[in-house]
Length: 145
Image 1 (cartoon, rainbow, N blue to C red):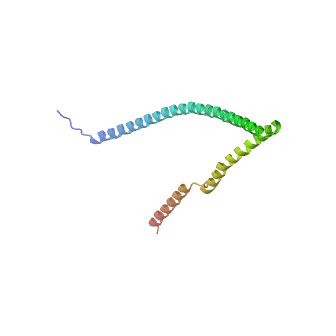
Image 2: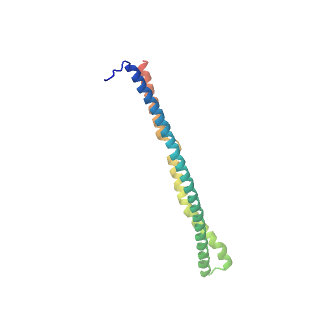
Image 3: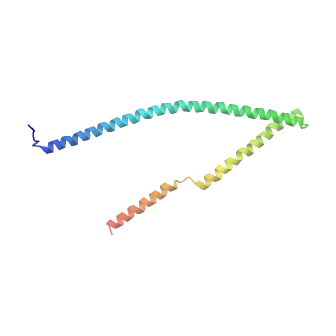
């Protein structure tokens, strides 16, 4: 025989309580999952950062030895042009310094020029705040004439 619930409010209250409890449990589980995922990603990021740092360190040494060999090549060319070994020993690094300095100056100037045009203030955020302020003013004026 089917039973009729004489207290429908109590069953509604229990459904709402169950929903509340299930939602809280689900939220806690999602937070725990996010923490585990973030910890895993952080550990992976740490390992990869060490590898990146080692690669950069080794790459800088490679660049140093490339320029050292380029310096020696310049010295040989200057000697072949008729300069003495003593003069080529200081002139080749000076020439290399000037070439590298000019090559470094070009992107630095472009970067400074671009940064000057861009500015440091966040334009979109500033515009959004102005729009919000105008919207609030219109809502207040509409309620309080």
